[in-house]
Amino acid sequence: MDLSVIIVNYNVRQFLENALTSILRAMEDVDGEVFVVDNASDDGSVEMVKAKFPKVILIENKENLGFARANNIALKQARGKYLLLINPDTVVQEDTLQVMLEFFGDTPDAGLAGCKILNPDGTFELGAHRSFPTPWVAFTKVFGLSALFPKSKLFGKYNLTYLSHDETYEVDAVSGSFMMITREAYERVGALDETFFMYGEDLDWCYRVAQVGYKVYYVHSTKIIHFKGESTRRSSIDEIKTFYAAMQIFVEKHLSSSFIVELLLTAGIFLRAGLAFVGRAGRLLGLAFVDFVLFYVALLVAGFFLLGLCFVFI
Image 1: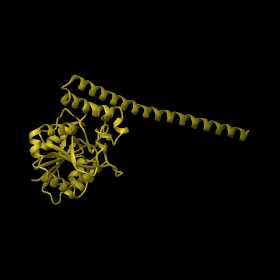
Image 2 (image 1 turned 120 degrees about the vertical axis):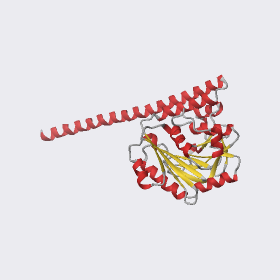
Image 3 (image 1 turned 60 degrees about the vertical axis):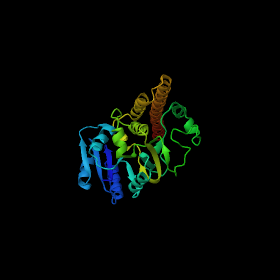
Image 4 (image 1 turned 90 degrees about the vertical axis):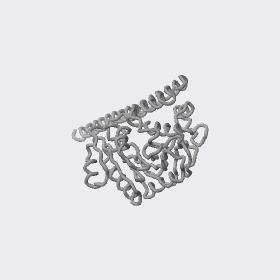
């Protein structure tokens, strides 16, 4: 069997249906299998898969096990020469799977690869590829230099924004929303690290693939659309807290050989997390302030209106 496709789903029934429709269309000429691992959705996702996609291998979890644990359940059962982890809030092109399989066939040093990822408005999703968070890369991200100078090779390493989106090249890491790995690489590096509940496990997998001598590639010649963050929005998960906790785990696991390096990266993570929390709180306070002002303006207008009526009737 050539390909095993694995989708972890949580409460995104309509997105999952669209993803499966596009994936099965793309697999018409591919010898493969499709897994859906459902993390205890309550939106009818399981019933939809059973009714509309009976050939899909459905695994029903009794609780939300997170991204890594859920994928690992299917990875243990998968039989494909290549393994694709893909998000349910994606849509693939008809040629996507075939193009990726051909790329691996032509690129023997590739252990893991991702493709071009577009936002729903057609713009390039920056997270499609990135560098590992070394001290300098983390510094440029935390202090906004990567955003100020995106075309600079010195400052734009975080998301490799100085590189063309229309070329294929080796990168440190690709997005967990679309990661295809060879079975050979998978058997050498092992499953996803279940210490990560969500976020960071993709970066960790790419890092481990590179450690054992394989290369990670960004492939520009096919693309998917990614409706980013849909599962998170439908859960009670604190996205900011979970993301920065994952980054902390990655730093402690892979980049703590030097106390200074770990200190710098940890400080950067906490600073960035703090700014994110402040930003979110500021937006909430801003909305509350607007509501407060509009409420009292409405009361004031109503007061003047009633006063006017009194004068009319007097």
